[in-house]
Amino acid sequence: MGVWWPTGTMTFEPPLFVRLYLDEDVHKRLASALRLRRFDVMSAHELGRWGLTDEEQLTLAAAEGRALLTFNSPDYLRLHREWMQDHKEHAGIIVSDQLPIGEMVRRILNLLNRVTAGEMRNAVRWLQTFK
Image 1 (cartoon, rainbow, N blue to C red):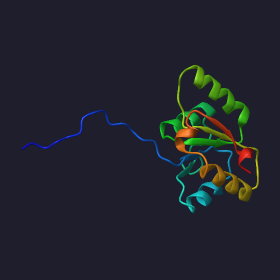
Image 2 (image 1 turned 180 degrees about the vertical axis):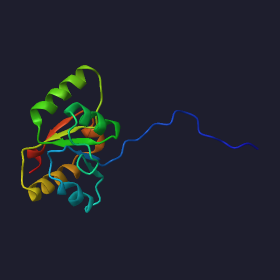
Image 3 (image 1 turned 90 degrees about the vertical axis):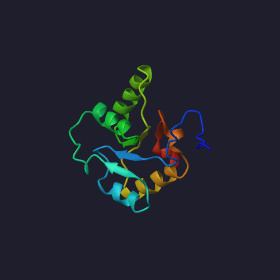
Image 4 (image 1 turned 180 degrees about the horizontal axis):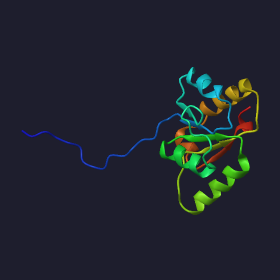
C-alpha cells in the first residue's frame, strides 16, 4: 500500500501580525519597546540602513514582508501611488506625525492589535486613527 499525499497547490499564508520596519527618522528605541511586547520589528538604524532613498527603504521593507513606519508622509504617499500604478506590492505603509515615544508605542500597539498583515498589505494607514 502506497503513501497518500494531498493534491492541490500549497499556498503561503501571510503572518497574522504585521511585521514592522522602522524608517530611519523613527525613534530608535521604538523597535526594542515593541519587541518587549513580542512583536517582530526591525529598524533602519539597527540594520545600518540609513542614508538610503525612500524607495530603497520601501523596497527593503517589501522584500522582507514588513510594513514600513515613517514620519515622512509626503514622499511615502507618492511612492505608494507610484507602486500601485506599476503593480508593485508592499507590506503596507504606516505614516505618523512625530510623537513622544510613549505615545508612539501606544498607538502602534493599537494598530498591531487591530490590523492583520493581510489587511495591511498594499495599504496606507494613518497612525493618528489608532489613538
